[in-house]
Image (cartoon, rainbow, N blue to C red):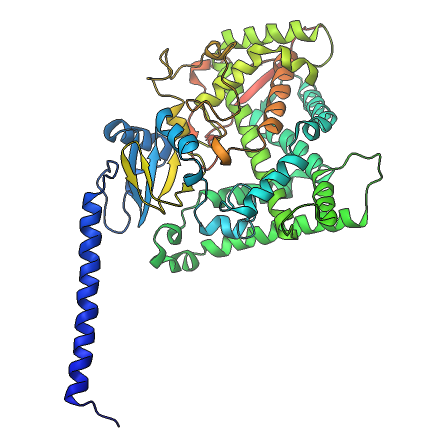
Length: 501
């Protein structure tokens, strides 16, 4: 066995000493460099978990309370991940407009990567040429005004079917949440894949997919504990439900490939995406995983946010009969005795639009906008934000900020939006139900028209009240936090036909 001479040992010792000195030097420079930086205020954190213990069961509310103490821009740590939290319109404007390019990417998270085919979708794909090309394709081919209008008959037919179901209930109790889930699922299914499905299987898959987005993944925030996600079974559950959806959508795609529509038939979204893929008219590889990820986006975003927003709005109307009567009056005047309000009527229903906007202010579907990540060092409101910092915008807190909404900010008052210039374009940073900047929701127009048409016809055709003389003050408005903000208890209502014509 070879032995080291004293000279060799001395040289090795010298090299190790130099390496140690350099490591200490780098650590010293980093420490003093960070001390010179002006970071946002931070609540005290714990070892390993950081500030996770301060989130509680309702992070949107917990973060609002922390912001009231530490300010509208805070730097928290979720595990080892730095997390900037914005809780005011002014800070949101800086992130979504002034520094939008620096904050337009998405962090790499375990569960979205598993569920969304490696984040090949529009919502979670990192910012770059792939995402730009994909968003352009989706907006032009799937979500343009012309394309949204082409599905008018689908929306009107499904809403008419819902109205008939309520009429057949003859005043018995109706679970409004289940009714709205069925409505939105049927619309999205017919638009996306060409026909409605027996809702039980698909609804179950979608519910489990959505639930996976709310489950805490240790490895996403504490990388050296990534193994915990495997041992706990989290990764296994995510892969199982992802495989179930993949098998479902694969059957749909094969069905479309084998049964091509004639030229005079209305194309669904799968038809359109297959045409895009076949014609190769875009500048990036539109693989099948991309197609499936886009369709999954449509199902998740199109159903859950839409039905939840409608549910919150109906609950607010029941709690505020003055607003309900005023909206019913507008609907009756617009309908002029016809059996149904149609989409062409909606532009004239200003109070309807104000009611929905006010409900979205108090109950934004995604209370903490989908996280972003800084791709470079940024100076934000005088603070240093390092590259790699994740960003959360608390849209829920901004929508209730008394400095902005000065007149009873917690109260449901649609009049504040009546004839207002605030719109869904994402440039009104005091009102961000669908985000803003480059990453704002692309399907706003598609979802809003469903909400407007369904709500207009529900209040036109029915008086919606609580059963057994229950007081409207007793209606449970508790939140169940998730990536989408649900009502904890779906209201049971009596739907009594109105003498409208």
